[in-house]
Amino acid sequence: MPLIILGIIPIIVGIAGGNFWVMLFGIVEAVSACGDLMVIKNITSYVPAAKDVVYVDHPTEAGSVVFERA
Image (cartoon, rainbow, N blue to C red; front, side, top):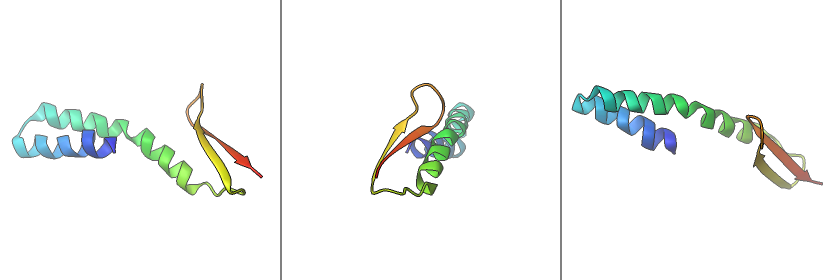
């Protein structure tokens, strides 16, 4: 959602309105949303072995931790 609201929409508005700064803001926010897209890709590509699964953001490093209940 941040990619759409803070990235794509300001890029379109900046181009349509001819405002370079709004377009630049949208580009910076769209590039920043790449981390969110990588997290979504990792979560959706993970195939759990159990039915009870909890995804948690890693407390000290980039990434996430998956807990499964067998």
